[in-house]
Length: 175
Image 1 (tube, rainbow, N blue to C red):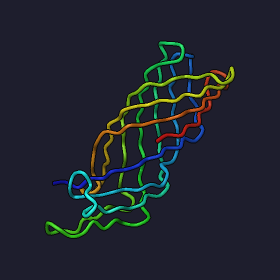
Image 2: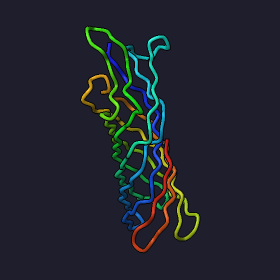
Image 3: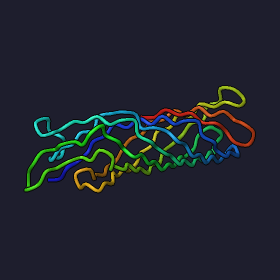
Image 4: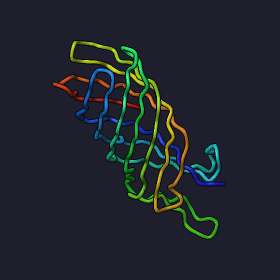
């Protein structure tokens, strides 16, 4: 048996600057992981009787994204995410196996690598809407063994990009 964390992460990217050549985009976004529910369970499958739920706070996040459009509107996307997950207080998971199990208040680091497909839909000459769907691998790091976990994740994202000179401003909302 092992402890696990199942997390719902919504990433709202703040405006960021990216370089573009119409076929290849590289962007760096600063954002926040919005508050959500964290669940911890000793058993796989998160059975209701042995699952403890906690709420996270607004947490800082950063994202590096690479997009390539070999076709005029469709192409692969790769991204790296990092968020420092913050809890309002330590999460008490209970006492067993001779020790107290705790989710730390501020020592949980979420990382993810993802790959997917993005569609570029032009709204105006300088504005595009770009939905994407990706499959990723995520891992949480922590000084506490109770807050470490990994797994696969499905990401859905919609980005609005406005061209400004040779780059663009970016706003995105994802799930």
